Image (cartoon, rainbow, N blue to C red; front, side):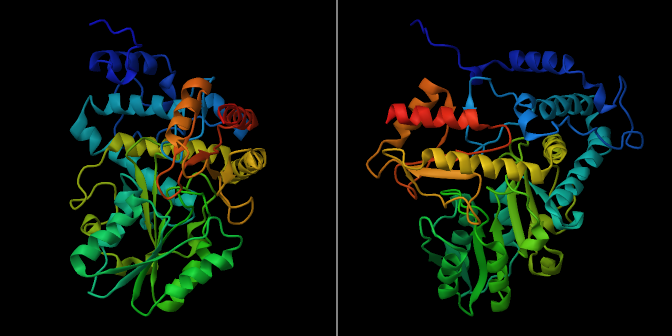
Length: 427
């Protein structure tokens, strides 16, 4: 049977993929790695050069691989890695495979370790408080597994947590007698005190852990983490934060937040390789978290963690270099201003109800809308992509009929105008 459809790029042969990758890397001008034609020793090769970074958010789009005609509003699911991150990661992989054991546990393990220091600098903490993981879920699972649970211990959380950040508490509820208390968040709340009052009402002497998102994946509500941390501390509880929708989107000062643990992904707003993540465990709380993964320390390689995806970890470091080159303060300012612009354009659009907080202290660069409980938001998301080349996130049942828009450094007002015009046309 003849198939007239365009070929599926995901189904390209391995030979074609690696052939394309080799040509791509060869054309990239990769001398900036400083590896030369021969393998450099660990002593000679101290660091990869930072990935080229634009000096302002306005120049960031040109550094990405996104097609010019695509308005991409879904880095809250998976973020696009900058071109230079991909190029230098390919070259590092090629070099390592020429002598994988010696170089993998020499030069390139050293380079991967530098990612921990880069992550610590970006988040405002110490390197020894950083663990490299595969994603937010693994970070949350690791924190939960490290606690010595007793029957009757309670976890206080919300009804807007991602399944990947809450499955760990459900696991111990099934196996260790842990009890889970959930507050129902307002959609949206108007001020931080409303959120704090809901949590305070369900806080008990048996609350071992308070677990909330820094920014919720459903509506982008930016939780008042500092105030929640103070509340948890006064109660003798630990605060574990799901930071998947915040790190890379916002200028996160993790020490100032006051949480005990913070997990995030490298492949969302941080724009790193897929399957990378970061877990922060506060030094003062370290004795309370004793998971198997960290039994032999927090380095990228230990005998309890095993061999990591070294190239992915190095790529994450390069992505952090990219963001640092622009400046996280500039990125947060750009993202928040763009989200406020999009909020204004969406506000009052017939058939659309914004469920995210108004621009201000509870808002984030993530905006969600609902088209109504009976709306076919899946069909709408498909039409936006296929007819208008606008990529958005289809929201789960927590936001019936919901669509989510992530505003990041590579987006601009033209993207927002395209999104609003497409929505208006389809509605």
